[in-house]
Each structure stands twice: as structure tokens, then as C-alpha cells.
Amino acid sequence: MSGTSSKIIRARPHLGTVVRIEVAGADHAFLTNAFNELARLEKIFNFYDPKSALSQLNHFTLNNAGISAILGVRNPELNELLTLSEEVASLSQGYFNPRREGRIDLSGIAKGYIVDKTVEWMLSHAPNSISGCVNAGGDLRFFARRPREVLLRLGTSSNAVSRRLKLCHECVATSAPYAYNDRVYYQGARRAHAAVVQARSATIADALTKVALFAPQEIVRRCCDKMSAIAMLFDNRGELVA
Amino acid sequence: MRTSKIELALLALLGPTVAFTAHAEVYMTPEQAVQVIFPGMKMTKTSTTLTDDEVKLIEKLSDEDVRSKKLIMWRNSSGDVVYIDQVLGKHEFITIAAGFTSDGKIKDIEVLEYRETYGSEVRRPAWRSQFVGKTVKNALKLGKDVKNISGATLSSLHITNGVRRLAVTNEVISERHKQ
Image (cartoon, rainbow over all chains, first blue to last red; front, side, top):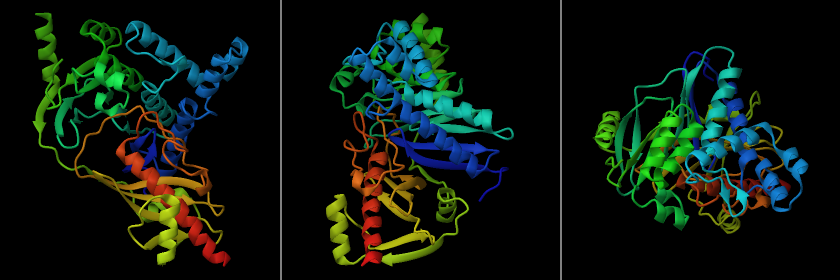
């Protein structure tokens, strides 16, 4: 087992993808605990797990269980992300929408949030100073030290291109409409092939990729200005379109 | 003017297009994975070969092809086991370590090596339920037990299928000792 001096990288299947955590200054046991924290957060926001806090909230809401029952299931993380989601929804004039068929679905923002919270957990629980990156299938957050650039991989498997992206913030999120099976999403976003957003938090970067894909440019600009983010849209050849 | 300035500023953030190269990364050795999944346990490396009948049974129960009859595993005296297995996706090649406790429940899944032939890394609004605590009786099938909103990434789909096959394999091998 490696000690705490060298960089270690681990990957586990979570959040519908392979989550990769890279850290310098910690050991494997610490990283196992970080993945366990990530798994704990994943359970809270799982839309399809009837036991998740989110599902319980939806259950009580749909069944008009009353405000006390609804507030009873709100754990701190769910509460915090609901507030953030409402802020982005309001600022984007509903182009980011955490509601689906009368229920709350946070899958357009929760992956970034879980990346943020996992990084926060790592920074607050590390016995000494650490640096590294959490990458949840395209939602990245660097901590303590960030490289000058990252590689963007754009396009479909038969037509993949890479571009180097200069980093201005710690967090980058990539979202592509072809990844959605939802036909409405796909048709609504046909003008762009992929959105890449840099921000100070992975939560905001994640949510704003959806705004960048679906909202008019004026709304995208306003959201980016307010949230200190940078949004870019690419066509299917990896060329910048907006 | 405003638009062109913004576009120029965004272009400055981009470097040149680079030829896409296959992405490959080795995260840990099988020995390290075994220690991470069952910390402090004395695990011994062993191997076994599945019979033709066992292969047929595993394929029937898991709905997955068994590509190799030979299994590499680490066991301890309590009956905990870690399998090292390879999962082939359409565009990726993934080596995983899957740990099972003596009662057949999944302890942890660790990715040891991830190699893409080509492809794009995109985020998808997909969720994966925890593998931990699942047994073969839970079906462990995407869309049924391991839920996804609208399609998992290829890699997680193939890992899920591979883990389901290993859960069945583990049960089949456990039956050997009972006979």
C-alpha cells in the first residue's frame, strides 16, 4: 500500500459513471472513506431509490402529507441543494428546471453537488494538506492545486476530438444532449453538440451546462455573470459555436 | 462588438485540437484492491476453472456471456472473496475487483484499470444505486435493481453487467462446497 507522500488514483462505479479521485498527501484508507462519503450522498439524491431522502420528499409532496412531514425528511444536504436549484431555476427563467412531472428531480445538478461535497469532506477530514481532483464522468473539481489546462473530449465515439481547455476556475462540467435519451431535451438542444462550463463550484458548473444547452444566449450570459462562470458550446466537430 | 469580444475571449481559453488518443489508466494492482476491499484480512490468491455446466448455468442466470472459464480470486478462511475480472464494453476495457462477503453480499467494487479505445467522456443524468449489500437474488440489472434515469454510461452499464455475472458465479462456486 502506498504511503501518504505519493499521489494515488482510485476509481469506482458511482453516479452512473466511473468516479475517479486523485489525491496527493493521503492514503488508501482515506480515499476509501471519501468514496464512502460520496456513496452516502448518492443515496440521498437517487431519484429512483424509494428509500432516498429525495424520494421520500417526493412521496410526501405527491400525497399532500403536510408541511411537517415534508420538512421532516429534509436532511441538510437535500435542503441545501434544493435552495441552490431554486436559485439557478429562477436566474435561468426555468431553463434549468429541477421539477419533472410534479416531482423534484435533481439529477441535473446533484452530480456536481456530490463532487463539491466529497471534496469538502476530503479537505476537512485530511490529517494533513492534500491536493487532487474528483472527476465524476465529466464533472471535475480540482482542489488545493489546479493544472493550467484540461483535455476536453468532444464528439461521439465514432467522431471524437480532443481540445485543450485553459482553466480559469477549479471546476469544469461537460454535458452533451446526445447523452440524454429524453427526446424533448435532445430536440431542444440540437443547435449545440456539447456544453462546457467552468465555475467556482461543480454544482453551478453542472447546472449551467443545462442552461447553456437549452437557454437563449442572453439568459446564459446573465447566469454566467451572476455566478462567475464561463460557458462554451461546441458543435459535433469540436468547434466552438458560442 | 460585445459578441465578438466574448467569442475572442472564449477562443483564448481553448488550445489546439489534438488528435484523439486512447485513454488508459491503471489505478491499482489486484493485491492493493484486495487490501482496500477487505482491509487487514489475510487473503490468499487462488484460481479455479468453471465446468461447462457451470458456465451454462451462469450465463443463463446472469444473461451475460462467460468469456473465460478460469477465475482469479482471493479468499480468506471466513469465506470472503475478491474476484478480479475484465469487463469489455463497446469502446472500453475495464479490469475490476469485486469483493463479496461470506453471505454473498457485495462488499465493494474497485476499478483497477480503465482503457478506452476511443470515445467521449460526457456526463449523463444517470444514477446508479449502490452495489453494496446486493446479492444475486436482487437481480442487479440496470433498470430493475440498479436504476438509471435515461441510460447509464457504457462503462457503468458494463460494470453492472459484469458484477451481476460475478455475483451469480460466486453463488455457483459456493454451491460446490455444499455438495
